[in-house]
Length: 138
Image 1 (cartoon, rainbow, N blue to C red):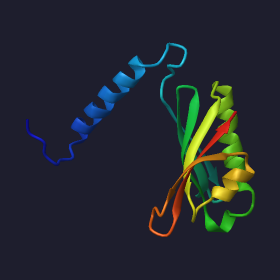
Image 2 (image 1 turned 60 degrees about the vertical axis):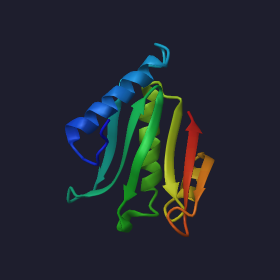
Image 3 (image 1 turned 45 degrees about the vertical axis):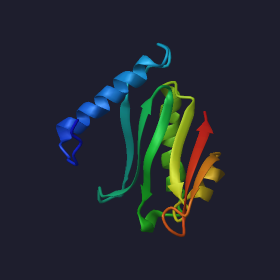
């Protein structure tokens, strides 16, 4: 058996595909939903992207990967609007759970104000900070 370090996209895609096949074999038919990658983008009057939210939906849940709002637009309620919009879309698609992670230097308090509950914390990651894992039942 030979194990070597490498990065070949095709090989990595194969490993991902095989794990997804295994995972799908372990859940019931009602739980199986296709992966849907989604994003909502906010643009200013000059058509520049000034905010957005990116996530994936599968197995009747939404995983929020990224939320970003440009500095000039922060504290204007746009982050909340983006989260509310992606949550509404997830509800329309039959999702009943949203999960995400955020760092102590990002927005744990913001998400708590929107009804998210912490279910785990990784302390001192990165050094001197914490990573928070959060959920919200829809």
